[in-house]
Image (tube, rainbow, N blue to C red):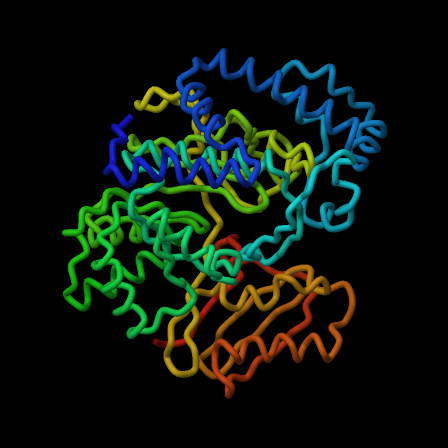
Length: 454
């Protein structure tokens, strides 16, 4: 693993400021990260024994304290104490977004501490509300921290984040601004990508001279192309790595980011719902966060597929006892890898990840923005089961919506107003009720598609 030395400032942030923040939040992130940095080198057998024991304890706790699983395990006569291998998970039915929506309160543990409410960005077309406890948050932060350090950088090294979630971009109060300054993080909004805004982004990146950048692959590639077209260099700043996540990383995006920023590109896979699932190491292995994450690949009938075969990624997150995700269908398609990674880590690996792509859309005035800007208009509306956004031109957008009941006029007006606020007052927003969202001819699902010309 590359040495993580850093400047005195970065070592102070990673060794004192960030741990203090986590301790004040009641998270055991630091001790958990240290444990993960040891367990990643365990042998396959040692890691397997740990995971099986962890799984058994997790399922025993869930069967006692979570009403949904207490009832389900009784119905299928599943005894968690009998778990002897990870393969025993296959005896439990799959969990999906409709089941979570229908059983939201029954999935909460009866001895849960204070839980935080979260919702997905909805790039899958199916936004979801769920809850997280401190154990889950500590794991996800620690797993991401471990993966960051694989690349010779650390919390406290100067970082530019190109992101679009309102959780990160909203309510930038004074405390948050001070915290970002202490952690040496600069946040750039991924939603608006006009030429003028991109010029500003390039200037801010050059001024900050970050050691790492983080963001959507589509957004970082877009900034990189713009800088290249403007004749602006970004490969002379000392950037060590670009971390990308939340979308499928395409080969041309990887090449563009690496060339323009002059750095390695590290792919990450996960989500707010499923957790921090996997991350790429410098030797190219897409390692899963195996100590707390069990990944299965299933076919359309829900049957387990062996390594090397493509199917839906199903995740069990063992740090979710207060609101469990057990055999959760991600909707993404992937392949497990059986051969070991040259890096020597014993963590299981994903070989391929497919199915996550979000296009940019173009406003009436030519402003280019991330497709998630429109998704956020729809994701929190409980009336909507799933959706697809098709931008036919700068002047017209179609929204296909699946809902259990016809949308009320006030809801349709809210959607139109939200879209026009982002795309322009003169944009025609057509709302089309449909019974299902159909895949593309390729068989892949795309939930934001733009045919508009720049």
